[in-house]
Amino acid sequence: MGETFNFSFLISGRSVIGDTLQEIGQVDQRLWVLTPDIGGALSDFKVKCRDRFIDVGISEQNVVGIAAGLALEGNIPVIMGMLPFMSMRACEQVRTDVCYQNLPVRIIGTGGGLTSGGGSTHNAMEDISILRSMVNMTVISVGDPNMIRDILHTGMTYPGPMYIRLAQGKKDRVLYEPGSVRYEIGKGIVAREGTDVTLFAHGEMVGQALDAAGILADEGVSVRVVDMFTIKPLDEELVLRCVEETGRVVVLEDHLMTGGLASAVSDVLIDRGVYPRAFKRLGIPQVYAGFGSGEELRAKYGYDTNATVNAIKEMVDQLMIE
Image (tube, rainbow, N blue to C red; front, side, top):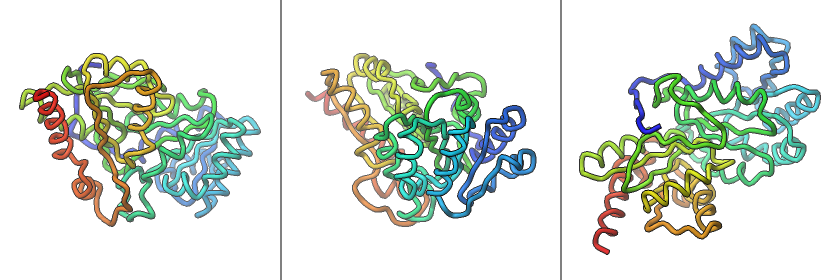
């Protein structure tokens, strides 16, 4: 892409989910929408497509099982829930009922990273590691809320199960001019060009990565920002090209530093025998985070904007010394 518009206005990802599902549901009878009592944004679908809306209550295992049954009958079920519970409480059902049978069930929800405000029990910080390990599963992490519409439309024809991760989904930052970016599953987006370092990010961290790149540009450091919104399948070609062109790699994510995007990127590099001049992970350390906003917790655990800027400066400075 080369340039990002980096808009400062915010919209609700949850509202985009609700609007898109009712739009699709009115023209495609295969769409069913299910929720384990997290359906506040689904009111329009519930009214206009009431025969294809199911709220099972707080029972994530059941909602996955029902979705699998609907998919076996030729439908495209979308589950909207809280991701820490969809990825862990319903882990066996997702693996065995959905992935094992390679069914077109879409799991979309909120709580990715340290964003829920509900403490460790309500933060999905292992979810990408869990879901990307499952055979047949596609894993997506949304950075710009406007991505959601395209991804859900694509999901009506895309094969196999799909996991779509959001942060809080209430006040999401718009990064790209609407209509300017084509969201192709399996392809990353170069949100900002740069020559000194490649900063891979996903989800809410893409906006932070762009902020850090802007600060560093004023200090003479050119940072390429890649929005790797599809974590599985990973855009391996883009990863290899970025390493070849910039040499230095930083991966920023609101997830444990092991098992997520950083691990996926490092797997590609090691498997291909490609070794960057420097490699750095920024994300959640091996802790159960306490209560607080996402911004507060990122600062506490060393992967906020300032920490990102400092890590890249140290990397560049160190390599200049060497």
